[in-house]
Image (cartoon, rainbow, N blue to C red; front, top):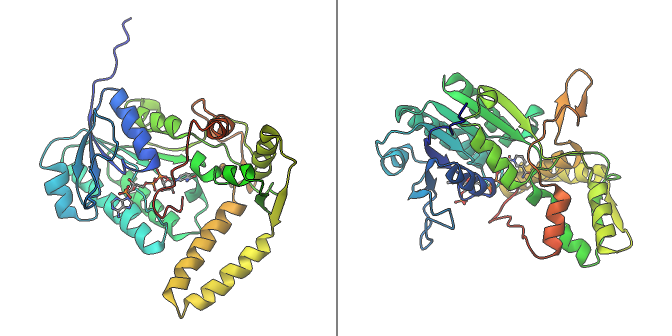
Amino acid sequence: MIDTPPAPLRVVLLGATGTIGRATAAALVARGHQVVCLVRPKPGVDPRRGLPAGAEVRACEVTDPAALASEGFRGERFDALVTCLASRTGAPQDAWAIDHAASLAALKAAQAAGASRVVVLSAICVQRPLLAFQQAKLAFEAEVIASGLTYSIVRPTAFFKSLSGQVARVQAGKPFLLFGDGRLTACKPISDADLGAYLAECLTDLLLQNRILPIGGPGPAITPREQGEWLFQRLGIEPKFRQVPVAMMDAIIAGLSLAGKLVPKLAAKAEFAKIGRYYATESMLVWNPKTGRYDADATPETGTETLFDFYERLIRGEASVDLGEHAAF
Ligand SMILES: NC(=O)c1ccc[n+]([C@@H]2O[C@H](COP(=O)([O-])OP(=O)(O)OC[C@H]3O[C@@H](n4cnc5c(N)ncnc54)[C@H](OP(=O)(O)O)[C@@H]3O)[C@@H](O)[C@H]2O)c1
């Protein structure tokens, strides 16, 4: 039997200038799809912003449904929407504007353009929603499922960039910071390229369709303490950890929340502190409601690159971490 590759699709990609969006753009182009990236117009900035030559880039204000139609979809036909659009701050208002409202407007525009498939970058943390941005994502997920389109809702575990902030600290001889004893949480980190490939595969792999897909990188699951231990050993430095009690974060959140009732800026800071506390205490693994625990074995894996492969590349200067402007995630 001759194995024919799937036919190329005409795909609208949102969030292409983000960490995972970039990797997804590359993966879609590599699979031969015709990719149109709708990117935020920025005065004096080339809209292409380093996106792959094989992708078409259109400057378009995705928060404006009229611009989405006239400058984005332009009355053309598309087969699929892939969205990696996400609030860069996670602040409640921005999350509802981007992760929900703009994403929903794009879903409707894609449907009007004839699209029959949608692939959504979500997050594994929405399974235990305590934060505003998680509620916004869940509300959009529900709209996607109700849309009648063939959908893949991808809920990844932790990204490498979110776990790499302490490499330079340790190289500079500073202690590795831990919440509690550093064993409160674990995750199966996933690389940008492995996640981009997985999102692209969702367009054509029937097994990945009409499903909510929690997904991690290659196991085993690792704790923050193990990340620190690996770094100290690799760098030949005597391990030095500084433990931050979770109770201290709770006190900060309580103080900021109270002050936030009077000063809105402090309410926003309280939300960021809550986001920090969430990731300090919740594992990025599949949650088992029956046992009331996170389950590493039940967390599916994809790809090949491990976090420690990435740390190795960072240490050798072969990779860098781009957190982007004001990035919270
Ligand atoms: N970090 C983690 O460990 C982790 C793990 C699992 C899931 N997640 C989820 O993954 C998502 C973050 O992915 P990422 O790191 O790839 O995102 P990112 O790098 O922050 O990129 C966000 C994308 O959305 C666009 N965007 C944001 N606000 C916009 C606006 N107002 N108008 C137009 N475009 C806008 C950005 O455009 P610009 O370039 O113009 O800003 C960018 O293309 C979040 O939803 C997070 O919950 C994160």
